[in-house]
Length: 117
Length: 114
Image (cartoon, rainbow over all chains, first blue to last red):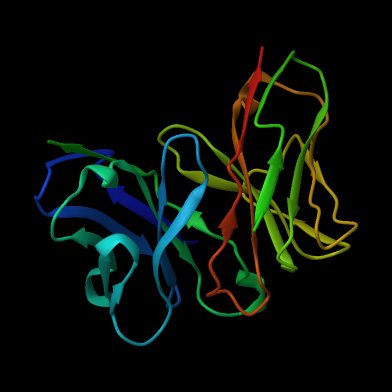
């Protein structure tokens, strides 16, 4: 079975500060990893994904994440927070390739990011 | 581009009532799924479909039924609503080009069971 743990249900940063949202996963096979963002009263929007290849992936809105197999982590970072980054962020995993894995996302609990002026 | 459309956006039911949450996508995606979102628990997969006529259970299927008669539509039915089904429900779709394809989410249906 696979699982995803997001450390910290709430993270608060000042505008312009570094954003770091932590995600650790467990999977018996190489996973596909995703970060989604949810703004109030909206659905989830894909920020970035790791499937294969380069372990540092860049996404939208200046976010990036690094897949570290040895640490089973996929932390999300942004060098300088903006007020518009305030939202809830979800880390998710699909258990590798194969037809039986289509779209079966396992989500973390979510992290609410607050950005202070 | 409409993407994934969910209706209704809000609904209040009484315990024991039944209803259908509608989901439609206009991207010709083969794969569609339903998730429920509860505070502190992320999103959990209820049911999914890999194509018209094919459905299967996810992590939390009890109390819900689905069918997939067309590529575009994937309704979720609550047969006898219970307070434990109070949640926000999201429908998602993706292409059949492999598990690495991102899912596109609707804006959700907020359901309260009294």
